[in-house]
Amino acid sequence: MTIVIIGPGALGCLIGGSLLLRAAFPPIDLFFLDRDPERAHRLTGQGLRFDTVDGHSHLLEVTATAEPASIGQAGVVLLCVKAGGLPSALAQAGTMLHENSLLIALQNGIAHLPLLLESGLPGALAVGTTAQGATLLAPGHVRHAGRGPTRIGLLRGSNEAAGYLEDLCLLLDRAGLDCETVADVTPHLWAKLLVNVGINALTALHGCKNGALLDSPEWLATLTAAVEEAAAVARAKGIPVENDPVARTVAVCRATAGNTSSMLQDVLKKKATEIEAINGAVVGLADELGLAVPVNRFLLEQVRALEHGYKARGS
Ligand code: KPL
Image 1 (cartoon, rainbow, N blue to C red):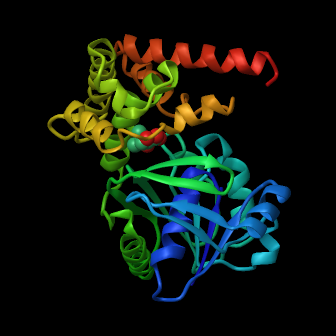
Image 2: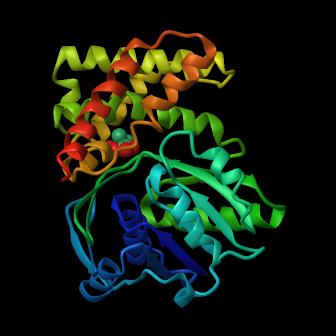
């Protein structure tokens, strides 16, 4: 099985590292595809440093490239870029996909679904969500910072593709990523969105680890309000929401207490964040539905201002 991971960021390195370390059977050919040729070259030369959740550190041999043509055709392509990087990642994926391939998108939020469905790429299409925590300590050095479920569902594809997805999920599960296929992925994407709505912007604004949100009554109150607003939007859209999404978000804060959220990692690197795909998506849908979501709007505006600050300084 040829597996290509597009985007050797925190999540891509976590998945790649877990597969290389633990998925011995069936044999896989794993490639990382980066858009930066120099970084790809360095990753191949230096290997991937993978710190497991139980504190062990492994140096793994990897093959990374910026040239999809050098990989040829892929069985599975995992899109591990941020929502904003999806258009160029889809263009890269396009050259490797064929009618029996499986493309799996693992972005936060829900805003990327139309883009995927309209991409017109050959093969089956699946979307997934994971609550695994991963921190990219440096390019090519990832720490697995906390465990949580990974759920993947087929958006488009034959019965054969569904079987292929089952096999792949089994492989990811054996690799320690707590992975299962689901018939309808939408409620799972929303469940994860509600968690990200509560954790990501707040950790980015306060510069704190996920677990620290539980130490401040004020931050916890904002987390609670943001998640409740987003849950009301989900319910108004007819999406089933589990009983207590706030309790789930708190549980994820605990399970990934030592993790630096992906949004804080972006802010620390002065990169564009996924705020538009997370709290921004909630605000956009709330506006369409005529619902008030003041806390999500506040978080959206604050993170936009933060991003604008470092973009404006040109760093
Ligand atoms: O998904 C995450 C993220 O950081 O984007 C969580 C689950 C909050 C883990 O940090």
